[in-house]
Image (cartoon, rainbow, N blue to C red; front, side, top):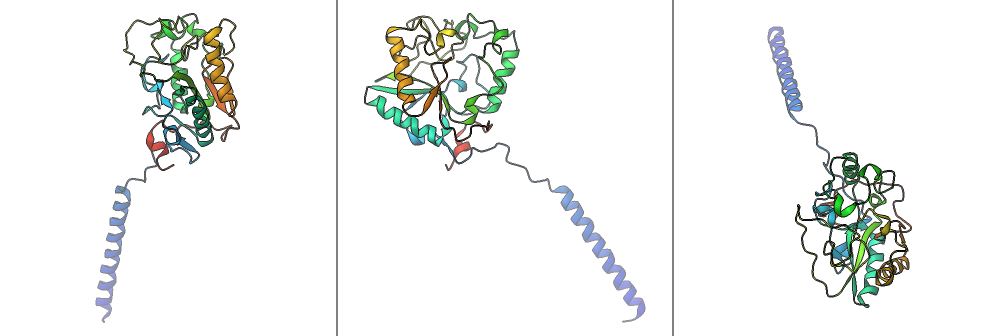
Length: 274
């Protein structure tokens, strides 16, 4: 090969290499970066309660507008109770005991994502929004919700072993739907007057921001007190600790995640495959 042809060959080779490099650069630039999973998933220690005990009634209030915020809460994508497996298994044992006595557990809230807690905080800071005051906090000034401990920036629910629940006498019809805008009745009114929850009479409704919700409030006597003690005694024997300020609030001990506040959404996909 003559020097002339060798020069032409090398020149063309360099041009082809340069063109290929340019095309690769364009391809790389045009390829979007890999996207991270938009939603975190629950650790394998979490389960849907229904997979452990399908007989426990679920009335997940924060997926509905019937709660103190007055609208579905951030992070609750489906009406599903998610808990750590030990907490769910302990509830199953409690349910077996109650079923033999003609009762069932009913859960209102289980695992709660941090974004839901953040929603509560934003709502509490908006002093103009008192849509649900007449039912859930009729005697509490909304500006006092943080100081009085009804709202906080962190919740034990986000650790996955805390549950809000009650007891239902069997057989029981489902609780009727709440219709936004319907007249509200104080959560501590007589059971025949307040929202018709199908649970036994606990003397105050779920999420009632009032001292009458304290589990051992002395104003609660008779059948109401017996009902609270039935719930507390049944769960307490299986490792659940009651929050004294809320008759419905229990935490399973020891918690698998005592210091971790999760933020995966309440949805079937969060625990799929567990």
